[in-house]
Image 1: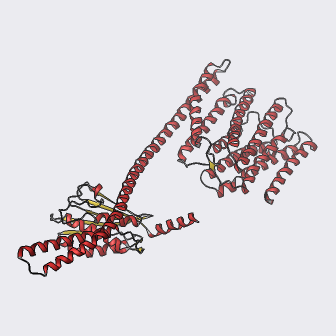
Image 2 (image 1 turned 30 degrees about the vertical axis):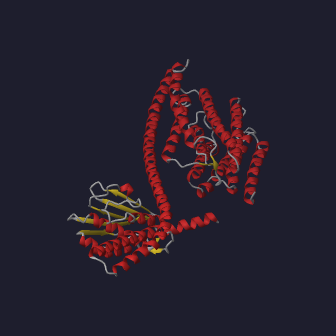
Image 3 (image 1 turned 30 degrees about the horizontal axis):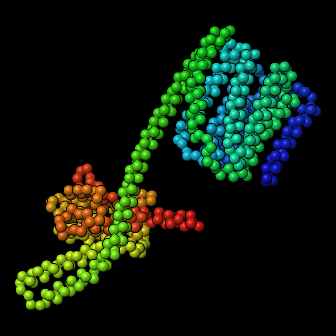
Length: 584
């Protein structure tokens, strides 16, 4: 325990002892005793409210809202006590029995109950604040309705001091019991520092509830006065109220545990619905209660009807927000499913490439030796004296062997697993280079190229030569696809987000016959001898090796579109740093 906390604890104990001495030694029902007792209670409630302020400043999210609501409850209680002190000390008058400020004392517990519903001691997902605010507003309106329904009629509609005090005490007792129930439940379910905080507040609230009941009993018998011995338990409970906030200053409240109950919004919403469904019961009691003055009955029925309208409107509004949240959840679920399906297809594609790469890598090396021998023998044959028909056959053999050797070279390139040297690369520069290199192809195919390269594109961490190979192949494919049309147009765009750099190629050609298979090895729509179907598979492997992804689709307006997403160099470095930190 820190020295500061010990000092504050000693100060609180001294204040309680000072009140004890004043109650014993100062004359009863005197101005000095009344002033001392009222000012001391105000000071203790001020300490309780201020003990929440450091937590409001240094926390965030639900924890900050918890301490803010607790501070609001203590501040409301302090406001009521200051009104009481103003009347008794400054105006030197007796507080009227039908006191308008009693509503402040009655409602000061509502923010505290709302704070308990937040459950800042458990690790939970943050919900929309507007939904929690509506639940809190619904409960606040219900408790206000209870006060107006039970207390106000005997104060303004049909003045009856005895009925007013009886109904006020009963309603306030019900509110205190609800707070004690919530604190007791959280005390039992929590652990660690939060268990200590809840335990102290439960003890202080229990002492306050029992001592205020005793004080009301003394008031009914005309034996109570400000500063009497009846105030000692009340003052002790007020001093105790400030202790949990002080204890929490040195406690690790940020260490949250897993929730042991339903999510925090469930019980709050259920209590709100229970409050709405209780309104017809209040109307039934007002209508059938015997001996109730007609003016009070009419007032209560009117108040119940107004509460039904207001709370029904709030329930409708909450349902509207829940519908919006449900639609968002469905959209996010659908997007997550689509991403999962895409990830699954990419995983299958990667497994295909990996297994095929291992297979063809070994086979290609074995084929190279006999192919080299066959090519040598065919060249040797071409140097001998042969007839025209024999020479034609020899040339055909040499041509087919060269084709097979080229195919084997492609297979070796496809199966190569050696990582490349990477550095920070400007994607725009690589694309401009690719467009220049492919300019003869696009010009021969009568394809017009339009580039829209973003100015704020961040560098990516990769191999410029491999990326150039990818861009070259896509441009070459697009040029080949639009070679038979007169108005071929290839558009290249680049963009950037917080974590990725995007490159998009789209044309107005005939599109892809099967976009889902374009990255499969040996899949090609070109005539035999004009394509081996390995180019896009190699592009796919290169982009994946760079930590990105490449997708293909047909555009609704016609043509094909290739979208490449690459992690920015900054995102790559952050991921690498996080990976190293997790290993450490």
